[in-house]
Image (tube, rainbow, N blue to C red; front, side, top):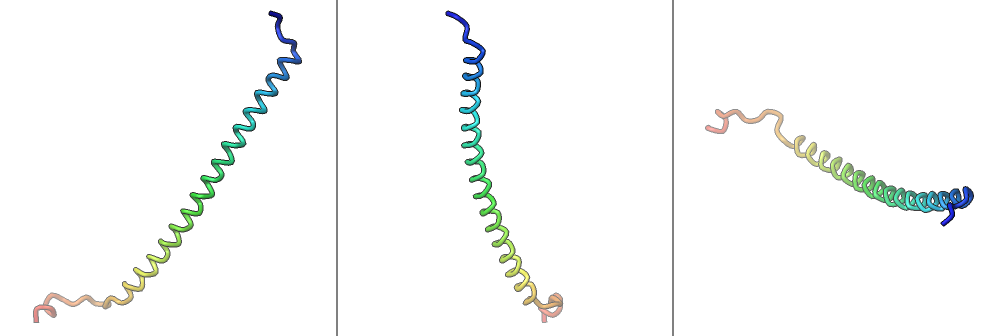
Length: 75
């Protein structure tokens, strides 16, 4: 069996590189979809956290400024 010519070797390598390039592009697209989904999830969680903080702040504002002393509750 004769050795492949340099042109054939280069063509074979280019074909392998093209296949690998397509695989990397597909992987990159999948990873970008994951990043987008995680970004949306993070934004939703940040929004929920802000809403929870607002509710907690409102509840804290409703608490009396000075808690009753133990003597007041015993009377």
